[in-house]
Image (cartoon, rainbow, N blue to C red; front, top):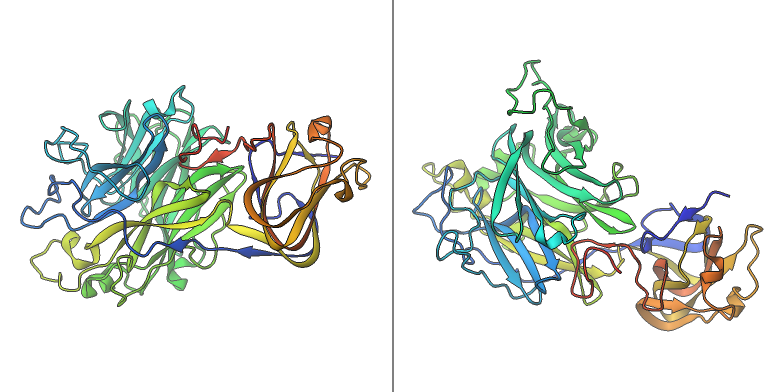
Amino acid sequence: MNAVNIDTGRQLFVDDALIETTGGVVRHWNKPTKIDEPLVWPGGGAAPKTGKFATPDDPVNLTCATDGGLWWDPTRRKFRLWYQADWLGDVCYAESDDGLSWEYPDLGIVPGTNRLFDDGVALDSWSVMPNYVAANPYADWKLHISSPGDFTDDRLWESGDGIHFNAIGVAGLSGDRTTSYYDPFRGEWVFSLRDYRENTGRCRRYFASRDFGGARWRWPKRPDGRDFVQPEGCADAPAPEEWLEIPDGIASRRQLYSFNAVAYESVMLGVMEILSNTACDNGDCSKRGLPKQTGLHFCFSRDGKSYEPREEPDIATEGWGSGKWDTGYLSCTGGICVIKDERLWFYYSGLRGDPSRLASDKAWHRNGMYSSGYIGAATLRRDGFAGMVADGDSEIVTKPLVFDGGHLFVNAECRFGFVCAEILGDDGKALSGFTSADGTPFATSDSTKTELRFKGGDLSSLSGRPVRIRFRLNCATLYSFWVSPSERGESRGYVAAGGPAYPGLKDL
């Protein structure tokens, strides 16, 4: 029988990819819990912005992540945040010991500030990432900047410390809110390029390259058939392919505003920023001085290309009239989430807006719809996106699996019941020593990492042999399972933007 290798990390129940049969269980989706107050406030460490969109008489009144980056750096034992000061503002840097209280160091690049550039780099959306394939990922940072406006240059940078960046090329053209990330399963840097189509509105094109600095694409023709003026070195490059969209987006008043992703355990975790707004979009918002309504929708992929968003936003705006810091315009940080205290921490920016900033002498980017922005967080149980819930006696039988570890771990909640397992051979019968009667159930407890043990010993005797696992549940929720090479329970999967418990980008 064909078997799925599960040495890739924790196996999540976000789809049926590994499930053969179930009985008596239902999948329940969970949403993160917001922290009430923001964590990064406008103006932290930053001087008024410079460059094309500078307005010297206005103070910095907005901090945002579009998408920037937030990563745990184990070499410094710090959470590191790259964020944007003011709308279309400057790249700034902060760091934290605990992810809650942030410091804004004087970097010496623009004296007295935490700005990374002294020449007013044109900035719309951008991504900061460690180099997954480097010997030390935290000594090789990558930066991708998409300039303001439609079909402007996307520029690439690199740095040995995440602070002093050197330009290394222009990758091509794209629309605003373009982002990038690394897909370690495919071994490619992925550029999530903003496009626009008549029926869907805002949407995405896909371009991937194994070489970050060598990424070059040629943007397709304009809608009227004319060619764009391509950046140097891009005229003969391949075109990015059409990719993600919201079907009938214009008619449904929902558009794919932005998309980012990160490797989490055995899957790619994506976040779609979906616009759900009034018919006139920017026009209606500017008349009220209130931000667009964009929510953050989780989605998952096992092939790196196919993503289906959750229908309702997992992190939603508070909505016009709320007066809350995240009234609208939610955007995730690059890296998407860190792992702290066995919870996933999703950092995101939101805008409150300012209905008083409607004066005709204000440039469009100074309108109240782009005002009063902050960065905050929402938290979720480790692996807690979806759980398989059993109210009574229930079971889950996996498809044939293969592994080389010896210790079966689960992430489960069973305060009033239990979870146990048995290992099935190719005839569908439980193997001697590995039946549910031979195992010790996980009962009346709650843990994100606990081992299920058997009288037959560890599972090393089954290494490389295709088997199924039958999980038996009673009044319990099972979030994930994995087979670890040791009793420590390391999954060998990816840990998104990392966390204090991990030595790097994987749980090793």
